[in-house]
Length: 490
Image 1 (cartoon, rainbow, N blue to C red):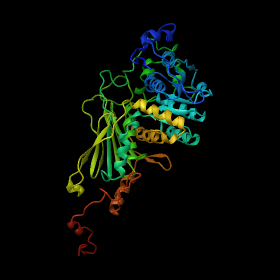
Image 2 (image 1 turned 30 degrees about the vertical axis):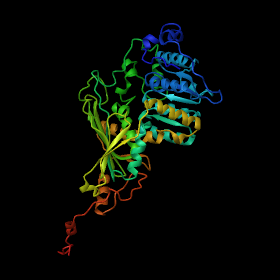
Image 3 (image 1 turned 120 degrees about the vertical axis):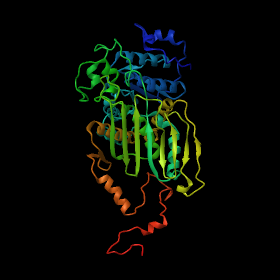
Image 4 (image 1 turned 180 degrees about the horizontal axis):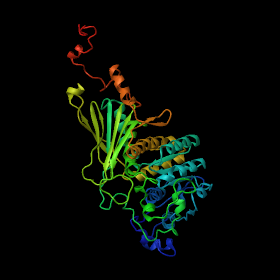
């Protein structure tokens, strides 16, 4: 069917009175989609269908339905009446079926006619709603970041494993095929011993980051259930006076988001973890500050996270929110060469840039381009992957499962905490414990060097010693301590 114009503004789309009737004149005649049989449909409810919940959840799923997937956009609930009205009207027009309205997510989850939910609420609500949903027997698509805290991330992972439900974390770039191809090359030793990844998310906005979410006089305590948005009764936030900026621009404030750390860094970090197969960092430090955007925000406009992994790989994640034209390149470095992805996330290939043959000792290792293709719309493909896994009951098939979402959260969350608390953090994945940094990390690597041990590798490595052994010069035979005046080289 012909899709409605999704650029129509809410001001024009929602009129006083019969919203759905007004939509017809604005959007043009559109035939309703044909649904699958009632017993075969996946009935999806939307928790927080405003903003990203509309563009990243409702709209692509409406397209998937019109393209033949057996799904029903069955229900909506939002603390802001205008968002709920708009989403309900959009669903009615694109599917010819009126979705149910719910007071809150608890009411939606209690409905046996809902099979899955999409969560588009602020970060501090994600864990609570995802856990409640899976415990209620629902599949879950949750916007990134998966959770607001590290403890919450593990709670979500544990619930996911115990319930067996499908859960997709909304990092749509993980549906790009480049990461699977990159991982294949890395495990086969294409770049040799993997040493480092670097990634970025540079932006520049004249009004400051996060303030492009507009404020409206329609946003009042009468149209927004403020205490429910805060999560006061759930213990998610303190009761503070209503503020339009906090509601619409919550990414600027620590109680509800973590600025670029979780809004942007989690995108790129998740992709790099998927490509490398790395998961939990062992040592993390964060730096930055508010160097320009003095607009009342809490979160920095310049930030860098350095994460060290037990496999002997370092991750560098950096950005400025005040300079967008000079980003660093996204890449993965190895002893024999690097995979260079460029910038952004809408790319269908990458370059292998070889190190000098004097280093690789193999003249056959040369620069090469890998073109693997890309979907036209990663958000659409990510939702398609979620729906197909729900229909097949395959939790392991999603492109961004909760264990990957948790790994990214730990990296960026510890970087955020390091910046705020002025500490270096160590993380023990075996015990899930965080401790203040000490000399043990450096001491461990120094001990490996003194003992002439072989390098560690990323999980799944199949390339033996490829690109991970040094060539000792002949004069190195003269190395060693002189004990009792005796030359070790004699």
